[in-house]
Image (cartoon, rainbow, N blue to C red; front, side, top):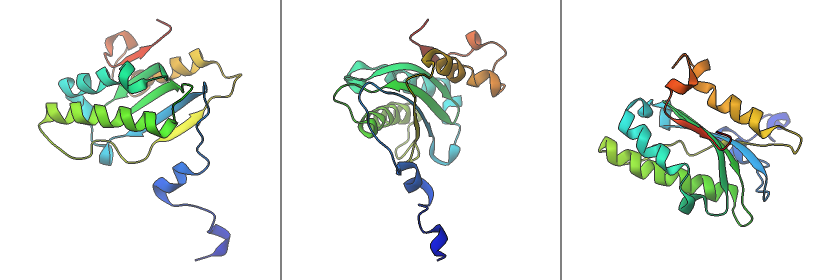
Length: 158
């Protein structure tokens, strides 16, 4: 292997490089379904997953600021709580939504890909602007002409 490239971690390991959990920081998180399978085109499955995203028992001290569920991925704007670890919160959300979604699909196994992408928002970044960007995803994807026509999103600023 060429030593110039030895610092690069392939695949999912690269997403973990430099990941930190900073209390009270807002994170933009994206995770995809296994093999980008559009499982959430099935309305009951999308409903089952979406119910988990604002579940206080799963979030614990963290707070979901905004989210949108698309056919093969999800975006969360999450403010990490005082005692939470980012990986643990994401794991709880993925695990619960997997369990409930798999039940509606009468299937077992992994629903989400192992990895997720996160971006810590800087203090000066406008959280509401990021939330607007997140919830506008169905418009940009051509799923609807008006965001009000898309059922799988929410933001605390409503």
